[in-house]
Length: 176
Image 1 (cartoon, rainbow, N blue to C red):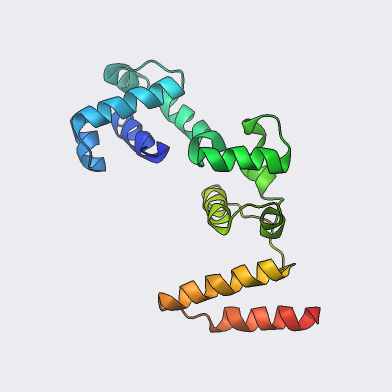
Image 2: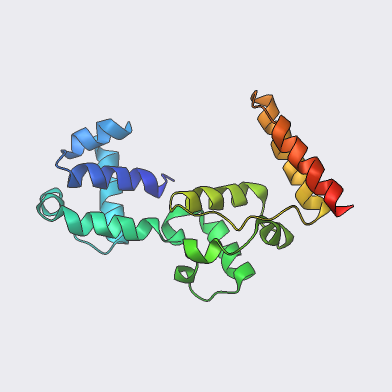
């Protein structure tokens, strides 16, 4: 499955005046695949599909893309959205907004079975909106374990983790 971001890229290129072929070339896919993706995203947005129509009224399509970017339904994995709805006890996916998620800590998500990979996805989505999960010190042994794993991964990629390790030691010594 092609992520919605690729569909959005194609739509944005066409709305900016590019031909479908140029939009396809810019995203590295075939023209027929671009046509299929453009058709699908227009259907998802409940907007008419026509290159001429999109270029005649680009603002309407671009506004709809911006609206979609705020919705977890179109940005996050379907399984993650379903799990979040269960954990957060919301009835509609549109209740899960960046602002809502920014009031939740990673610890709360981990305690409710959300994986670190999923938390990273959520954090990426929030950062696109200038937000973040609510910051807090590690609250459980599992939190500390995940922080240590993240630091180990950063070290493997030659990142300097000295300050982060010092902070973690300080936080852990404050708890003792």
